[in-house]
Structure formats: C-alpha cells, structure tokens
Amino acid sequence: MGLFTYKARQADGSIITGVIEADDVRKAMTNIRSQGLTVISTEEKKVDILAGIIKSINIFDKVSLGDKVLFSRQFSTLINAGIPVIQCLNILVDQTKKNVFKGILRDIRTNIESGEFISAALAKHQDAFDGLYISMVKAGEVGGVLDEVLDRLALYLENIAELKRKVIGAMVYPIMIIFVAVGVVSFLLIFVIPKFKDVFAMFGEKLPAPTQILINLSNFLVKKGWIVALITIGIIMFIGFMIDKVPAVKFRWHKIILKIPLFGDLILKVAVARFTRTLGTLAKSGVPILEALEICATTSGNKVIEAAILNGKTAIKEGERISESLKTANVFPPIVVQMIGVGEETGALDAMLFKVADYYDKEVDATVAALASIIEPMLIVFLGVVVGFIVVAMYLPIFSLPGMIK
Image (cartoon, helix red, strand yellow):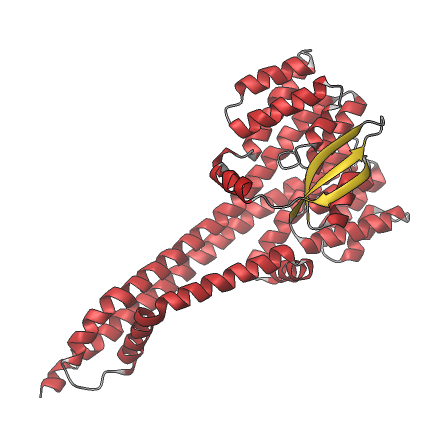
C-alpha cells in the first residue's frame, strides 16, 4: 500500500486536495471517483523518513475504531438535538483527548467553515475516515438524515470492532503459547544443555542417539543461532514485503489462507459477516449499489473476496442480480447467496443482509470456541512431547551410568 496525493473537482465545481491510501495509482483514482469526485491529478507521495519516525512515535495516538464510534455517536446526538454543525465540532474538539484526532477535527471544522460539505472535509483525512464512512456521510447529507446515518455508522463500527476482537482473541492464545515454547526450548538448548554436555564428556562413552541429537542441535544454536535468527527474520520480512507490495503474491497468499483447515473457515466467515453488514449498512443509508459494492470490496480484507465482489459489480452493471453474480464467483457459501436472492425478490435487501451478518457473527463465535477447544489440547500435547523428549534425552546417559562405570 502507498500514499497518493490528489487534486479533484467536487460536484459543485470546487477544487479539493487530499491524500489517499491505495495499492497503485489506478486503484487510487478508482477510490477517488467512488466519492463522486472528478480526478484532476494524482501522484504517489514520497516517503518522508522524519515524518515516518514521528508517526511511529505517535502510534498509540492514532485514530482507533473506538474513537470513531464515540465521535459518530456524539456527532449524531448533537445534530439530532438541533445544534449547528460548527458548534457540534467545537464541542467534539474540546472533548477529544488524542492530539492527532483533535488536529483532524480542527481541520475538518476549518474546511466546513470555508463552505465545504462534511463528506468533502472528511475525504481529506482518509487515513482516519475510509471510503465507507465518507460515502455514508455523503448519503446522509443528500438525504437530510445525517444524524441517523452517523448513528448507523457508530453501530456498524462497534460490530466490526467486536468482530476483530473475536478473531484476535482466537489467535492470541496459540501465538503466545508458541512464543513461550520457542523461548523455553531455546533457553534449554543454549544455556542448560551445554552444561550437561560437559558432564557427559567425562563418561568417555558413546551417548544414546536422542542425547547426541540434542547436543548437536545445542552446539549448532550456540555457534550459529544468531545466523539462524537473522535468516528467519529476513525471510519473514521478505515474505511480508512481497505480500504487501506485489498484488499477485498477496492474492495467492489470501487464497492459501482461505484453504487452511479451521483458520480458513474462520477467515471466510469473518469476511462474509463483514461484507453483508457493510453492504446492508450502505444500502440502508441510500448509497448506490454499485458504489456500495466497490466499498465492500476494498474493506473485505481478502483479495480473493475483493475480486469476487468486483467481478460481481461488473456483472450487475450488465443487468445481473447481486445473488446471481455472487453465485458465479463461487466464493460465498450457498446460504448467503440464497438469502440475498430472497432479499432482492422481496425488496428487503438491507434487512436480509443484516440477518445474514447476525447469523455469521454467531458462526464466528462458534468457530472461535471450536478452535480454542481443538488448539488448546494440541498445543499441550505438542509441548509435552518436546519437553518430554528433552528430559528423556538428558536422563538416558544417567540411566546407563552404572554400565559406563564398569
């Protein structure tokens, strides 16, 4: 992902500038146009090293989902109470504690005071407010229901935050156990085994195979462990760079993720829940369906699903129904396609999408619980085998000590 600066013309003819994050220039231009803007120019923003250092220092001061939920909820309440927008923003600026977010709100207030729409002012800060947020605010402004849309946005963001919390919760435990296991085993091999090796050398006898394997591994890590660590870190960084910067590699990686047993099923269910809730929220807020699908694609989090949604968008342009286009993609579960089809036939697409999202939220809960029940005993058995092998390998020479003494 890179940053691109742009200059664009709004529907009222005014010129605005801003910064947007995208994979390439073409994607950046597509995202800018999806906001109802006419692109005048766009170019990749050069990396400022000093700015990057400052940004990394302020990593804990960045705009979080929780900040946006609170902002949306409070903004909605203030507008519903009949308070003018500028006064609403004055109140919100005073209440905001994070310096970065406070600065963004001040800039938004300044732009609105100069005559810009709220959505256009938000569009200048796409590092904080994504395309979905901006499009919904724009639809709320046009429809005169900004307070309702902001309240809907707060609810949507809360659901997305809860979904993320569930996934992170499912991943944290096994990752922590693996890190602890690697740390303990490394400590034993580098600091404990060498002391036993000196004792075994006094026996002057050939050591049992498991013990010799363990000592050889310990010798290797003591002498070349730092090389192994550097190579491992280098490989991980290279793979991460390729996945982040090369679209074909990212697509292949995301395709592999969906096929991983247990985890692939969880990722798909999370993506379906997010897609249906996002599309339902956008449709209910009055965002045009083609624009809504493009936003859903960019926020899906998986390139395979993104491609399926964008291909479906092309088919819908040609007159195909949403359910038919999703069925052709062969990515979404049949129940999702069928329920969306029912929603289209009954004219209650947004309500049906929310039902699908709620159903898959429950499925995510069930899958996370199943993963925990499966992974926990597997990790315990794995750790038991590793530690047991080390203990047995260290005690084998001691068991045969009487024979060595004779």
